Image (cartoon, rainbow over all chains, first blue to last red; front, side):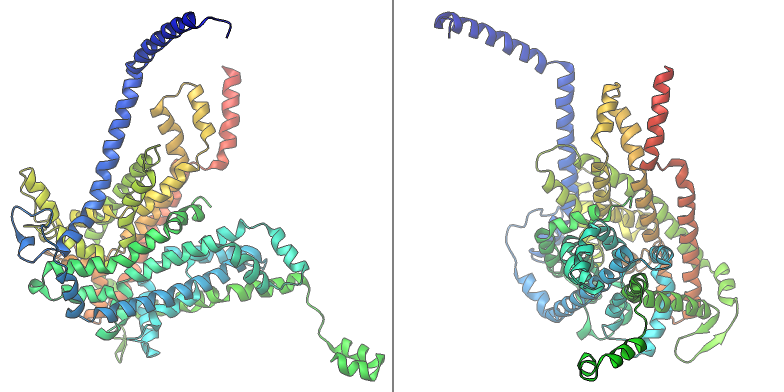
Amino acid sequence: MRMSVPVSANANSRIASRLSKQIDRVRTHPAILLERFGRLVLYVVVIFGAIVFSLPFFWMIRTSIMPGWQIYLIPPQWIPDELHLENWVEFWTMFPFPTFFQNTLFYVAARTLAVTLSSSLVAYGFARLRFPGRGLLFMLCLSTMMLPAQVTLIPQYLIFSRLGWIDTYNPLVVPGLFGIAFHIFLLRQYYMSIPLEMDDSAKIDGCGFLGIYWRIILPMSLPALGVVAVMNITFAWNDFFNPLIYLNNMVRYPISLGLMLMKGEGQALDMQLLMAATTASLMPLFALFFLAQRYFIQGIVVTGVKG
Amino acid sequence: MSATSAGTGGVQTRLVRRVRPPRLSFTAREAIAGYLFISPWLVGFLVLVGGSMAISLGVSLMRTDLLTDFTFVGMDNFVQLAGDKLIQKALVNTAYYSFTMVPLGTILALITALLLNQNIKCQGIFRSLYYVPSIVSGIAVSMLWLWLYNPRVGLLNSLLGQIGIQGPKWIYSDVWAMPSMIIMGLWTTGGSMLIFLSGLQSIPTALYESAEIDGANAWHRFWHITIPMLTPTILFSLIMRMIGSWQVFTQAYVMTEGGPNNATLTMVLYLYRKAFQQFHFGYAAAMAWLLFGIILVLTLLMFKSSPLWVFYESEVERVGSAKRVLKRES
């Protein structure tokens, strides 16, 4: 405040002009230009990639709301000019799709519950309790991840058919009760990160092992359980191979077999109906993804690949 | 028990105590609880894995429809495998798929992870867009791509038509059928992209900072820090992809039924046909063992090769001290 106002204004403007010149010089400096150009290229590439990854979905939805004659136009009609939602009504009545959805929901729920519960029990044993042979057994458990399902496919088919389980959901759900190696591994990793003091204090309070598992470990590992649940839901929702092998009767088909049934109609099938059915079959998965996004993304972080 | 002993006096109490089995030590109780907790997996392992593998071996030595006919034929199935023209075709096709898909998929996942690890606007939305295709794997993807590959009005040939290129017949052409499957597989690569992203985020920034001080440019930092630190993730991705790619089935079954001209006949598709359409379960079991052998050998090869190129963080200390030694010398 010692300086008089006009002088200061003068000085300020001089400083400002010098600054702006300097800024211009920095802005047009080759390194900065290169950096800005690099960022532009980065955005172009990222946006291009995003378009490539989403275009198939666009094409699917576009086809599902077009009248049949329009999808075969050449050159193609990129954006439908009218909405034909009757495709969506038609495929529901063509095959018993409500039943297919119900069956899939049952499969998803039963399988997810079975695998999550059993895998978490086993993971607790491997993570928290000391017993002879633990390391060896855990290595065996991990090694089963490498075993292709085809080796056990035929004997399991033999066993399940002898039990009279063909054309039921038992062969699809019951194996889940024995835990899945990858999910055991994943949950074990997470349980190991819970401080042991938690167990000790529970023990002092008279909690048994089952009590510790149920009252301490499970409530503390909800994020990991969510990850496992989400993985199982997507697996069962998409599962095609197991239903194909074990289910025969159409009333027991899940959506995956329902779609195949629809495709089996051959050339006579209207593509817009098949795309409407495909879109509908994906809607619940998309909804799950947007609701439980962090469980999809976290899965990887929890897994801690380097283990 | 306490009620009766309270009524009849101290002598009996002592007696009752004596007959009670000795209290187990904590270690023993913990061990029993441990076995009980892992028992679901243990039972499953013994029956569904161990038992199944034993039965599978037995079945592979038989000619059987799993109903009435169980004829022991010794090594016949395996001998037949060696001379089966279709299995050779299936092996070549699956190997083609696997050896293309595994490296391409890993490279694409790595590139997309590097892109989306940059500090950009709407990073979360971009990550979701890249990732979403991978959660819809299976039949829906096959249905969708069946339509995208339509030679006349599919998305791909429509796009190519826009720039004046006559697109191939994709899954309806001998030559293009397998590349079509691979392109489709690359679209669902988001899962490994996430693995690489988390791998990238776990690289300590201090490494980059000290490298920058030492005058390393972006390329040096990428080649000498990012890549080495990611090698464990790359190994994991390669192995999981390899195991999965040898079992490719749904796409081939749904889109091409192995055609055209058996160009997409894969190992598991052929196995499925032999077992569940022609009911040659013994032959199919032998095929399953061949497949298992291939996967096992390839997995072991990858693990064995890993000391040559995989860099584990536990070695950082050693490298650090080596660097210090170098500095002292210079």
